[in-house]
Length: 150
Image 1 (cartoon, rainbow, N blue to C red):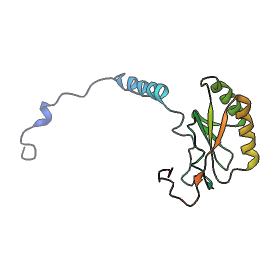
Image 2: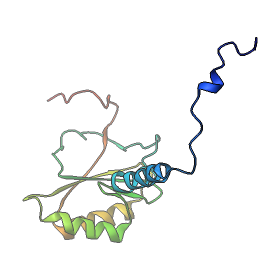
Image 3: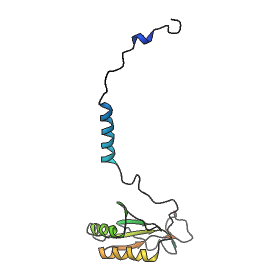
Image 4: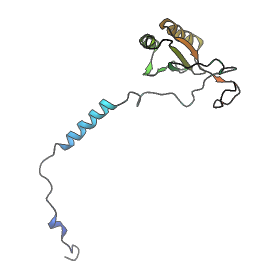
């Protein structure tokens, strides 16, 4: 009696009998939530931290507002606004989006190691779809965050 002066164990409710289906409902709702609201970009590879645009003198002078943007890595991966695509899927993606804007413009952000043949293939696919193509580059020797000095 000294160890249990209030005798609380006798005043507790007994544990529930049987299994409750609420646990299964919770698991089902979590699965539904991830299925409906999940993003395909959560586990997809993204742009690495070593992504570098090439440097070009006068890169800012020819700038224009693009309507669509893709990123190309030196490994050959092409990232559109809808995720990872290959060159064949990119052609279909460009064809589907060409009619949405009166003057479609595609900005190609290619990493420094992307080959010229890959860029020509991408640019050819974009021109076939009716896009004007801009190649992304950093201003040589300047601060990339500095405003244009025009």
